[in-house]
Length: 263
Image (cartoon, rainbow, N blue to C red; front, top):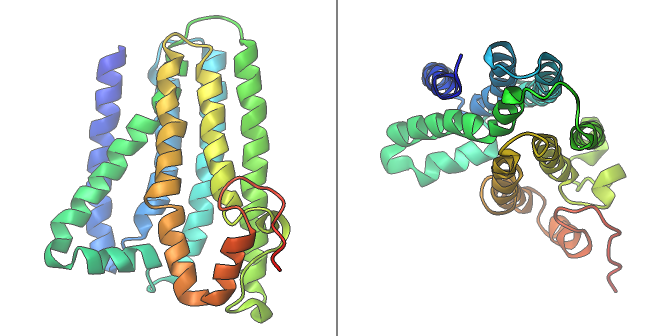
């Protein structure tokens, strides 16, 4: 398939998928399932590009494998978290219900469609890589794959440490400061962003690879300014109060680093 029809077909398919997901979310009254679908959608997108794009098969297989492993790990992690609390909805979506109360249904439907579009936009790295016909791997691609492996391991470890902390009854109402969470308030977000940096580095070896910078740039903006750290910290302050305020004073929000000592 030629490039433009391929990317428009991907967008149309995902928009239909997320429209159906909206109906499911409305039926079960839990809009947090969009996070699960968003994560899994990248696997479908990357595999579609790998199957239909005209680039070197080895490269297509490699980027599709990277995207799929990350997508399935994140999606499954979110599935366990979201459905483990169902029918209690994630606090971010509870807040959206309040913020959009006057016109909730059309706004949340538009939000779901934006999620579909964001998958195609952020997945431009997979698209660019899958078009590259060069019959050998470039050092940048090897470096990107190595960085991806490091970031995936870091994100997985951060998620495991937080899950273990939450399972401990003695941790209820406490702030997680174990492992990577001792050095960053959001190490999972940091390593998630680093995964997108890895995709960008990988794509730099392909023609027009610089366009893939939209991935890490967009993810960084969302994590720092929109749906990531701001909403998560608002929820933490509501649930943990002064203990979390002290954590904010001593520990970096994003990049892991040694905590400050307060008097």
